[in-house]
Length: 301
Image 1 (cartoon, rainbow, N blue to C red):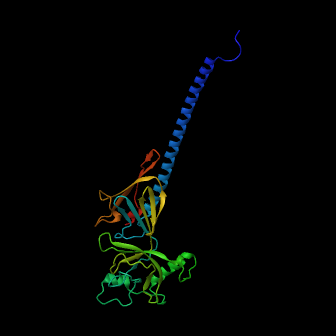
Image 2: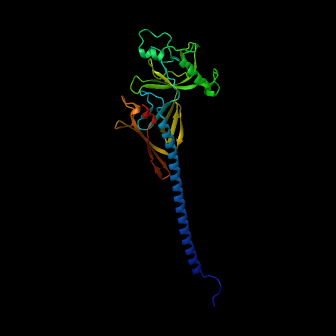
């Protein structure tokens, strides 16, 4: 008669079967975890890229608002950088210095009380002193001062208040794409025809008569390392999306495709669309969504 219990052979067989079952279960579990992680990476990559593209497309559609044909409202640089601009204020000033400005000049004449007799019609129209309210300041300077001083919610002007400093873009359209740069507008002098450049940096370029001054918004998209960055109004960039390994931008205009846009002689208003492709890699997952959009303001010119 056999005593209770298991033989050594039975125990070994049971252990073998248990090990096999545990191996199958463990392999299945690890496989499921891998698939889950892969799916999580894929979802995260898609969400990040979609969010970045949504922001970019929204900016692209607003680009060019209240800007003229000869202003670079949309720029593509080397196929890897996109610059979008729109005007924020209807009053645009002109540079009314017959010798232009350069170097350290920080008082910018934007009106002329005594234009020369030989001045062009364009110069007189842009720079003629206008003072309908008789306060001694050109009416356009009045408008800019009211805009500047109201930025902090209080219409009264306060000297030294950094919340009343406006970023202004000066642009000379006379050469190619035109030269341009940002500066801080922080006040006006008592002449009634000058505004003041607040930052102490020298002008990067020289600007001729009738260069224009805009209160506008600029948003520049570019790749730095593996981060898609957004820089605003000439400032440094801030990261939007990480794990980006490629950014490709193309502009389509006049049946041609450009990675540098606009070329000489072509206006931004000829745009058919801008195509942006963002390539992202997260783990082993790589995605490269692409989108096309056109500034709605091209249809108003």
